[in-house]
Image (cartoon, rainbow, N blue to C red; front, side):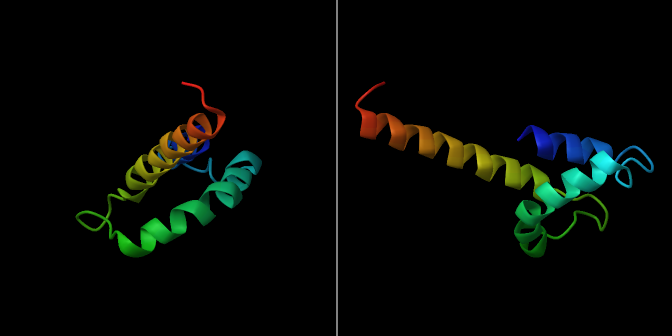
Length: 76
């Protein structure tokens, strides 16, 4: 989640995505964001809300995984 947030914030600063860290984060985050960008068009042609939806889906997946682990281990 933090990598996605940093990657989004990096898009607001010129030339940061072209740095080593920006390139590395792009290689790690873009494969996850790509399916969301395919189905969610930019709002008003320039505002990309797909990372927000991706973060929401990722959070739901974490909550679900934690619930399954708690169920399997019998703990709360």
